[in-house]
Image 1 (spheres, one colour):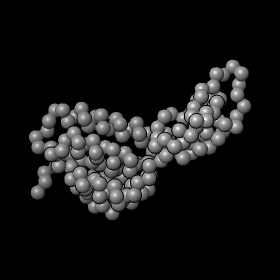
Image 2 (cartoon, helix red, strand yellow; image 1 turned 180 degrees about the vertical axis):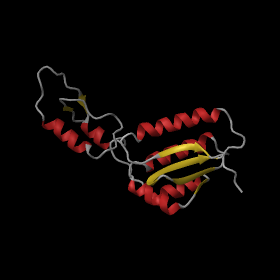
Image 3 (cartoon, one colour; image 1 turned 30 degrees about the vertical axis):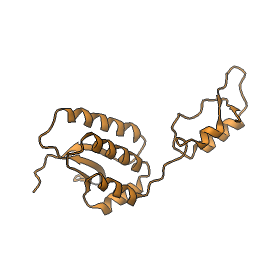
Image 4 (spheres, helix red, strand yellow; image 1 turned 90 degrees about the vertical axis):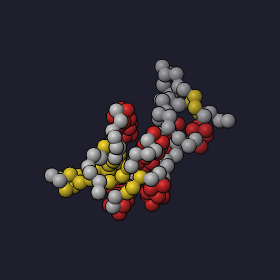
Length: 170
C-alpha cells in the first residue's frame, strides 16, 4: 500500500468533514522541514475509512428511526426543519436517542422542539424522559449524555439536550 510522508499531523482520527480533502492536499504539497520528523500514514486507508467520510442523514429516516425506538415526536414538522437547518445535529440525535433507549428501554420519551418564551428566535431540541418514579442513577446518565452532546456540538449553532419531563401527562 502506498504511504505518504506528511509534514504536520493529520486531522484527528474520526474526522467526518469533507474539508479534510483540502487539509490532506495542503499537507502533501508542503515542503518538509528538516527539524520535523514527519509521521507516515497510509493515505488510501485513511480516505477509504468510514471515519473520514461524513455521514449523511435523511431526516425522515432519522425521525422514523427515533419513533421506532418508541420515542414519540411532538410536532414533527418543525423538528424536521430544525434538523435540516443544522446538518451536524442528526448524527448526535441518532446516537443519543439510541443510547437513551438502550439504557432505559421502559421510560416514556418525547423529542420536542422548545421555544424560549423571551426570545422567539431561540429553539432547543430536547429529548424528554418521563420516568415514574425517578431513579437516582438517571441523573448521572443525564450528565453524561449532555456532556457528550456539548462536546460534539461545541461549534454548532444548534441546541440539543436530554432532560426530565416531570409535567403531569393526561
